[in-house]
Length: 212
Length: 385
Image (cartoon, rainbow over the protein chains, first blue to last red):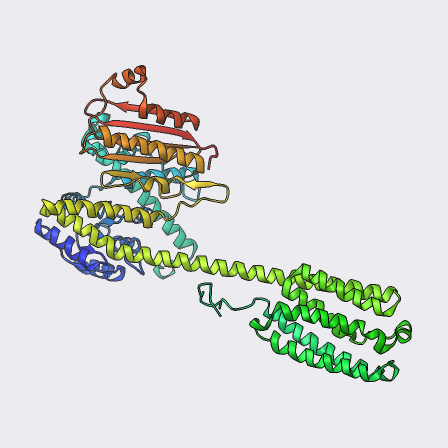
């Protein structure tokens, strides 16, 4: 499923994916219809643009994953939207690709997202790394902030410097699989923390009243 | 009238922020005119030259009408009128000597214009601010004392009031004009920012999407189209960095967000990774670091091979920033760099080391043939967050 507010881009990406054997089950041009359509067609992977106008792709990502947690969301975005990208990833997106990526990179990213792997660009690794450091430096909130292990920090830094997971595996003398696990784990901790924070916020502000 | 300022919604450029003061002045003048006329009617029988008293009353009436007519709208608030007002009033006050009579004045009689004269320095203060107020107040105070031939506590009070009130009104008018200017300035800045955002949005939604698409399709088609695609890609990234970063802003204490400096360097073959929150460093540090990174990148361009890509990573450790510049090019053979340094061909290496050392930081260079080159720059930023 492809979500983007620009018709030409939406059609182009959909065609690229179809030509390479993917089934594009739906497209959507704004956040509200993306959430609605995703609930009906149950896509394996949602390609999400973040710049959707009134409601952002971040909110759409959050709602799609809340409704059906096994949906994988791959953020496809322009550079320069760093904080939005970080928010989308915290909201549950499992990867991020620049719109300037080649078709091969896109296809590879969609495949890996479908398999449940995280798709990390160097830019996203830099953002995630920065977010962990920000949380460590900020005054402690009610929930303890998640921390990275030394090995996870090491792996993230290498990703941010543009190394592939195979290169990292060779350099650190660990298996390729282990590298991927480390990367996944940095994301999972961030998303879990985000969900706990959101739930706490909801309880504190009585937003969960309708669930009781 | 020529409009020399761009129109801002909500504020017409011809608006005089002091208009309420001018309206107040008109009211003051009419009230004091009625007072002066009453005073002449009551005292005319004591005047030395009664008919001249009524002549002055006529002049005051006409002049009050003229000023009211002109002062109602901004174009009529002319300096000639304000000064003519002062001159006329001073002459009328001094004419009290022959008209009211020196003996009557000595005996405590009022000047012929009475309170009407008080509106004059107030007008000067509204027109020209505090110094005009002081000057007009002073002249009027002198003209108030001279005809009487004596000075007592009541005249001292008049003097203080005339000068003091004019000064205060002048200060208030200046303050009003200044704050109106500031509001205008703020509205103008806001309009410019809104326009910038609107432009950025439309570039983002239109031009950038098309450029990205051209690049993608062009690369697939290959040949000449691939060249066009390459160009489109470069422009896409340049435009994106532009609309994303905006002007290089700095905070009040001179710190600047280092991310803005680095993000301008991103190209299709150079990736820049940074935190989502600002990395604030002093302006000088940012300039030196950006220059060091630029040198490292230009070195990549020259020596690492044409297909080489580069990655810049910015990390903020709180009290220290770490900048890594890595490329996947041919690397530098073991010892070659050392040999070059020994021979004095230091070039880039020394330049980067020099810059970082000046900032009190350290440089690490890792390289091996076929494995690219990596610079890691550690620089203290003083404050911890």
